[in-house]
Length: 471
Ligand SMILES: [Zn+2]
Image (cartoon, rainbow, N blue to C red; front, side):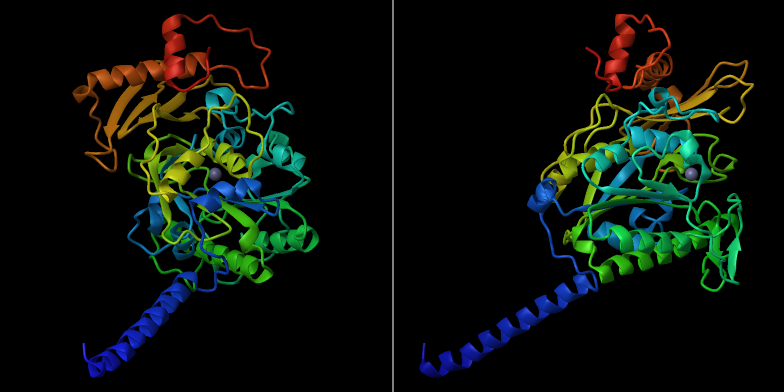
């Protein structure tokens, strides 16, 4: 090679290297935005348990149906901030809530027990003092714990305040002139903006300590939105989407605040919901009546104190009862004993390492007592068992045989066509498991005064197939 050629080539290589470096820097800046977190790895996830500086922010958005979020495949742009949280963290793509009614669902989430075991299925039910809740474990580990809620179903009289140093409704401030509340259920007024004020108040006092903050958002349940910024029309489900968009803006402000105050790099954020919402898919609107997918497929997103360059997707079936076993495992804290949920840290690490996810071996369960609000009537459970793509539905009907249905999501993504006659063996197996769940679920870890039931070996095997730890 002549000297002339070499001297021509060197500057070219140099220029290309500079260009590549600038491009990388540019792309990196675009990924990071004003998010201060460093980029993390599977090893950083595994090492969270060793950290003693980690805070926990639990964002519970009431009545948030997964399918109405961009990151869960919705065509409308309702949720850019939530999607960004998922895109730089971990998104559980097929996630089931345990009920479609707040109290029942939240009791299962906090106790990591299916409703038949938590026994919080009726209007008058409350968690006993002897139940061990995650906030108690965090408090014991030295976290300052505060819960701020705007839904009366998680009020202290139902046992939900256990482990919280402070557990209260936020002060209700007046809402803007252009705010509409289409579905008013909260007598206390205010809006989720009040949670921002409560957060700032809490962190001003305890921000320098290790903290756990639970914020229970309620605006979407109320279809509360700003008329000025609403962009999705005026129908029932349009206004629901307008409310999601408004909640997204509140969350954006919350994250911005955490960024500015320097909390993002030492805070684990959990984003979850208690149930979804129906829009007449089966003739009914709202929630707390059935446990079909519209009201039980919910988001679950984790945001780490670092960014995962491309968000992790956990595609195996998970449930709200898995949330706290996963969080306690991530934090390296003692597990809750004798519970139904499982840590999904193995799935998170497998996804982060690009390895195949562990296979799920048992069905997931959702449950609602359709008579939860009627003290004089006996229980009438609607149970759904989700096993792979199959969803078995068992509906109690007064003075009649229960209605049994089977839906196949692989053929019918909206799960509206009952294919029970085409899969008799699947239906029979899932029907047996449903009966075992209803009739013979073990007592909760905190015990029970009711006499123990006599059950045979077949029933014991059915309970084991549901994942109960029975010797
Ligand atoms: Zn709710």
